[in-house]
Image 1 (cartoon, rainbow, N blue to C red):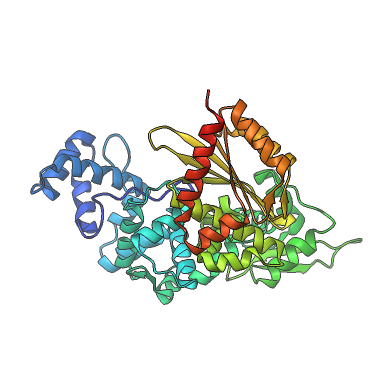
Image 2: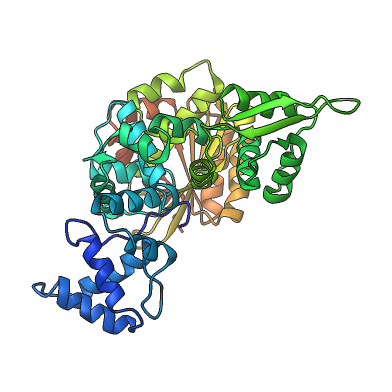
Length: 447
């Protein structure tokens, strides 16, 4: 399962089918062609439908997406065979839920629900989809993939509606939802070291430098040797994710010997870290779930990292209002405080467009800053640049932007301090603000 996808679930929810029955039916029809299997599914489960084969086809795709049956000639995957062997219904749903959580981005869904609840936002089909889209998930706002996953997790009592059953989650995989965020937000050097330690699969303590070398070889990540203990070993030990002690043998500096703690069980933590590999060191989800008013306060924070993150989340929320699809953050470096952030969006309304958003927490946006974005637009194949700032563009920067729009097939839009205040007061103001700038751009580009 890719890091930005949820399994396709259309016509494969416990509201429509019984998992035990589907597994037995599939076992009875192993070896059949997909066409024959779809026809049999249509007869068994969708005979009353006006489009039985279409619905059965969706069900087969979903069964493949959930990793139960193989592509091509119908047969079971390892998961399918494992589930088929379970006779007890409660045990079956628990095993399926555990697989969903650990290997199908289910923990990303749980973390998203935890953050929505933490910030007082009601979880609904729409708000959950929007929060997942903001993380880069390939979903439409009307997609039912998250909703189907919710229904399967409900069968194992992990969820009750969109509410997390913390006791059941901890019982099933050994962690609570509140433990997920800290793991997701580990700095890269701690993250890759911990993942390498998980990958080493050793029941015995390992030399920390050996694990560090494994992380470098596996993930192409370079560690600072002089600060390695202070930046990696000691913080992970303080978080109770590893046990560490120095050896007493030999001469010279004594290396650390490390091992996983009970809290960091490999069968849970490794899949969790894999799910969040694309979000190392990024608490973006938490920021995105905050209201515009809270983000406004944080944008004015003295903490450069907090204000940079808040402006990024604000940009994503605003661009989503006008129907743009979040693609990714192009640049976000936690080591420099996150003060400069760029976000990329795509739009496919009638024609395809790519937008790049540059966020600046500075009093003045200069001509050099705009020129940098213009240069990057060639690499990113962007059609529109949005300069978003808590301050203002200098006169020279505005003049340069107008010149670029006159000479190139590129639109440069600006959201300055007053615009941000207007959007926070009434988020839909973004439409009139950008419409006015689009009209101005059209006048500039007149032949």
